[in-house]
Image (cartoon, rainbow, N blue to C red; front, side):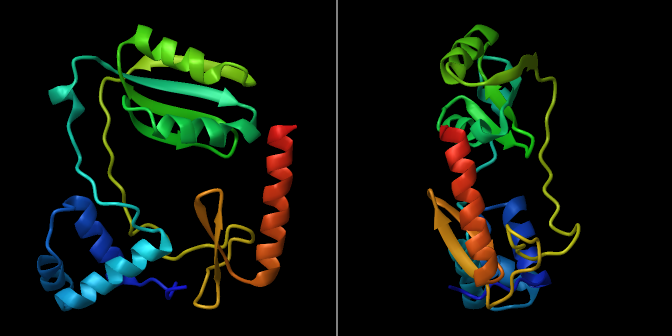
Length: 200
């Protein structure tokens, strides 16, 4: 596993990429005081850790879309929210998906209300839906701030910072980090119980 420890320079690199993913490593290197190959190595390490998933383009959908934007809020039983969020990520008209611990899923969708209602009627069929709401979006913005709090990877089991002795787990096409073998065992047990509960 690559080195897990992250520092302020990693945060600066990520902020520069968030501002403009088309920046060259040379430009980033000049801004953070490193060489381009060193920036490249740091970005590759963050990709291997799963911190950087992909480079993308931010598009102002209001300039292109023929339909209004809708915010869909669905409250499900907690065991079912992850599956719905995964399915929504694969839907073309869904721009952004948020899932909360309590089983709530929010989706920013670019489609008319009738199309949104048809889409969700199919997606929610057979699920334990506690509440469901569709509303028009007037304005939205996304401003990630990496400077708040500590810039570190936390153990999914105990919440402690994962250092270079930590472990990376791949479960159901997702990456999780734990600080030690004890937390790995506890997390795998808890994950299996949640899966059984969702299926049962």
